Image (cartoon, rainbow, N blue to C red; front, side, top):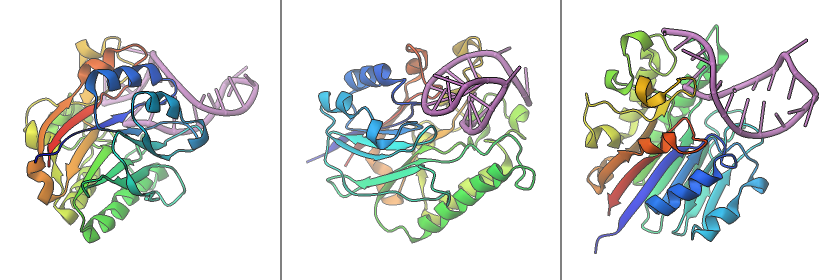
Length: 264
DNA sequence: ATGGCTGGTAGAACCAGA
């Protein structure tokens, strides 16, 4: 018997400000598991009722006031939830749990890293590189079949940005970030499902700035959000789309949802 | 090739995102 699962990653940029389009998304796409980043809410104030009404009764939260915050919201029971502090400063940027089939889901919000791509001039950039370092150590020792997804805040390939040359020195597309990302990938043999199913050099973006007059017309996007899987799960991911239309829904997030279909 | 935008929280000539 084949177990089909639809798993989503979405940087929501405030789950409370965005609750109407989150409900629309759940009604229209009916995922099994929704992983949110940038929920921007304390756990006590998380709008759990909206999710429970739609049949999503299993929530694991890691929130804080104002910034950051992640959540896994599921129709299926979640077990062994955990929260790693890969930032080493208490910020809420990770939550993980195990699905009934034994597969782990790790939902991460990697720091943006500020404006300047230099750890001396900009401590936030150093924090971002160190975050990758801690995730690399974790990846090296990882044994369980795992889905690692979220907002990685790096667009590694030329086809992951609207203009490769223009962005070479822009944080999210610098070589040192890409080196750190790939070192983490190689530490576990992570498979990039986005590029396995939508191969390079096809255009593939997940984020478009709010500042563009018409985000679709200018299309100055970047692929900042990713779905990676352990090597043994590579063939279980059978479909992957970025729901770009959601970038145009009322009061949108600046990120679109990534929908991955698995057959276990 | 940045930023003209956005949210949270405070009550900002704010901070953060990327």
